[in-house]
Image (cartoon, rainbow, N blue to C red; front, side, top):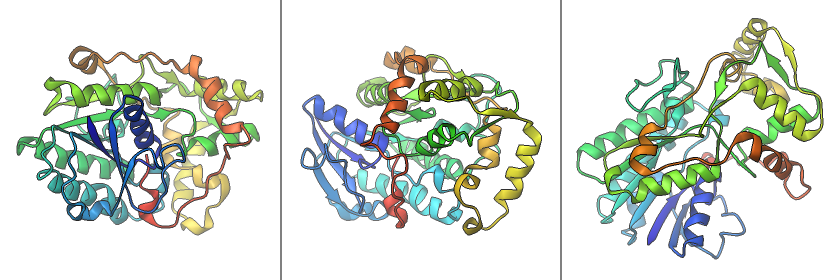
Amino acid sequence: MRVLVTGASGFLGAALARAHRASGDEVLALRHTTPLPPDLAGAVEELRGDLRDAERLGRPAVDVLYHCAALMADREDAPYAEFHRINVLGTVSLLRAARSMGLKRFVHVSSAGVLGHTQAPATEADPYGRTLTKYERSKMEAEIIARQAMQDGLPVTIVRPAQLYGPGMRHLWPKLIDAIRRGRAVRPGPGAAKIHFTHIDDVVCGIRLAAEAPCAVGQLYHLAAASPVTARHALESIARALGVRPPRPVPYWPVWAAAAAVERLPWHLRSGPWRMLTVHHVELFARDRVYAIDKARTELGYGPVVSWDDALASVVASYVEPQVPLHHPQPTDPLERMVR
């Protein structure tokens, strides 16, 4: 099999590329300026190009295209136009280019975040959320475009991974672990909200199943862990793995109000932990984000096997080992941040 992965410099894209290489498949990695991880450099064929001008890539002969590239949620300081330009218009460009590639499958990696907060385990038939971050809104718009491509006859499958975690993830985790280790993190309210943290290995397995199952053409699937954990349990277990005290509880609404006020400040006035204080992050402690995976189980044979409690110690260790810095350099070019 020959596959093309966008966002192969990022967490999910790199994991997909590694999995296919381990299976003996040929991998093409589309990147703009961000280098590939050292273990992939030289092991895959690199395509240099701008996602927003994908038609200039020519017609690479591939069986499956995985679209993982995106401007990530930790760049909420960016104007929405930037999210739209990369996440939405980039998807439009790639789908247009895909029509001439003779693909067997175009796997569009969306996000379960497009549903916002959930009242119960959300299914694929549930409506989009009403209150979304810039990132989530852009992923919703990109998903709508991918759905239209399905109707137009392109062999598209859409997957919505839940909240990813795993060794080496650069989005959010280094800052969270650093804050907990230094005793700077707090827990707004009881922390009873459920979050569907899902290990990278399970998500990669689910995405590959979606790419290969004939029944998955024209379908949408949630990919999440077998069960969620509460926000409180997540924080306490991270602290336990670090050997430090868990974040102290603080009243919810004052923190929410402070986050709302901080969000109104210009980005350059928000430094350090203040950049993590957002309404979105605070609401994760009070409102569920849980997803039903029955459809993926039944149609794809998806069966997540990695539990939060079993995997967490090794995940946390990957961030505190000397060779893995807690703070990665932040690219300044928007296209350099197209990682998942």
